[in-house]
Image (cartoon, rainbow, N blue to C red; front, side, top):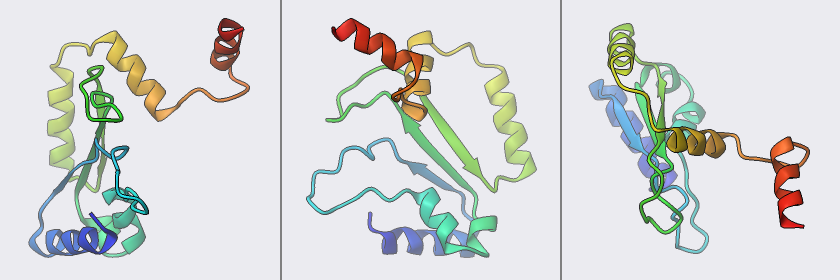
Length: 131
């Protein structure tokens, strides 16, 4: 979606007091030249008051989809903004009763949000392996 569409959704949700659940899993799958992914979180923040502090947002991402949409490792995360105390309590309770996520999925999520970069031990190991 374009920025104007995302802003319109935010305005409607603010007016009607509707929580936004933003599935942002396919943000790497943009195939139209000149088109870019714009996150709902970014638009919400940039719209400023009252939207940025009043609209409830849950933004979700995953390592379960690859660059072409194929299934991959099972793991994901969500980021919340402006949730009511009650909603936060319910999420905490739900997460507290779950079993532990799979280890490869946890590792993949960790790498997705904080990838290896030069100067880190992990990239030095990769460089040694490739020699």
